[in-house]
Length: 74
Image 1 (cartoon, one colour):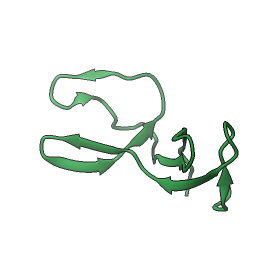
Image 2 (cartoon, one colour):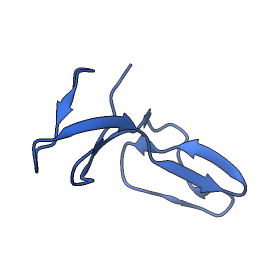
Image 3 (cartoon, helix red, strand yellow):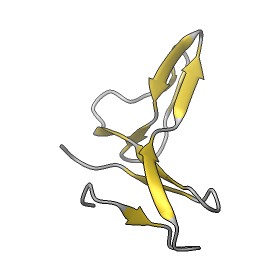
Image 4 (cartoon, one colour):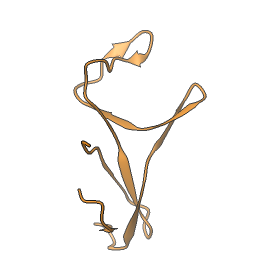
């Protein structure tokens, strides 16, 4: 996905880049994509150690509000 101006696939208006905010225990972070199926952890909620994690970039349509997300490798 190139970093160029995107057009909404629903209505054709421009889309702005941003991210979805995760809030937990008073901290704020950018959402991440994690490979594989979710595994429960008693201490942390989910086990993520050893799984690939990528930040999620989300585009929002300036017209209809449609969201489209990508997890790109650096």
